[in-house]
Image (cartoon, rainbow, N blue to C red; front, side, top):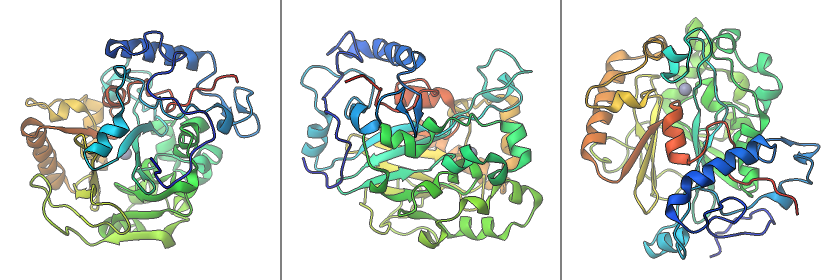
Length: 379
Ligand SMILES: [Zn+2]
């Protein structure tokens, strides 16, 4: 299938290649895949990209990236997801990328899973790369190359101390996209949930992409009204401002009972903005119809999977953090309740937020500390 944009030159393989999965061809081999992925990573095959040296001393991503075993879950023999999507009249493949973890003070009080409360916790920054029939679309960008190279010039001292991001270049969106075998220039569109520094830092790495966001988000962030606004919204990350396309509010039919923005400029109808204000005034979720079900990245509308349970719960430190960061408490809590209702009643929707590591690992099938696919292998 000609999908209209270029990939790396590496050999493509379908399903799980033998080196990634000793139990090739069996559905139950997912754990084997993940274990081996982690072992490859631990041996330096998975996470040591340096611009000057390539992956682990090999010549660079074009030679080493394996294109298709993107999901480490094994498929049964003969399974071909692309063909199944094409048969359904659509071809939207979604890759889950954690674009730089943060390590907040408060340990288990923040993530609910670290051993200690005096150490640092672990939160993800869950982004999506969507293969549409015509181009690549990135959903949120995490922290980017310039943040990794110059954190103190780009980010506030307050958040650097509080969250201590893991500045690993190979976890930036642009490097993971290269590892998947794509050209970053083929990312023509970015859908942005909001302008907090940990979501917008990668914008600069895609200077030719059109950035879609809500008008209210841009207006509020640019105003830089309060001290906290100036710490969280960082104009240093906005070099692509001339390519931002903003939307005043809902347009088109509601989605699952939520107001939404349909008909995004230059994008297929399977991609929608679903405004979820509260965390920030122009905060929005992003919904993707993959052809095999919907995915809704609810971004920072909630922070912990337990908040969508029938009896909602959240580690206390994380609850306090959300309280500190919210710009409209009523709207935030109301939207959380609506998401809870949606999770309970709707079929065939994956709902997930940006910062819950367990959600990321469940959906991506790999450790949040391992970059996407493309394990470096010798020729
Ligand atoms: Zn966030």
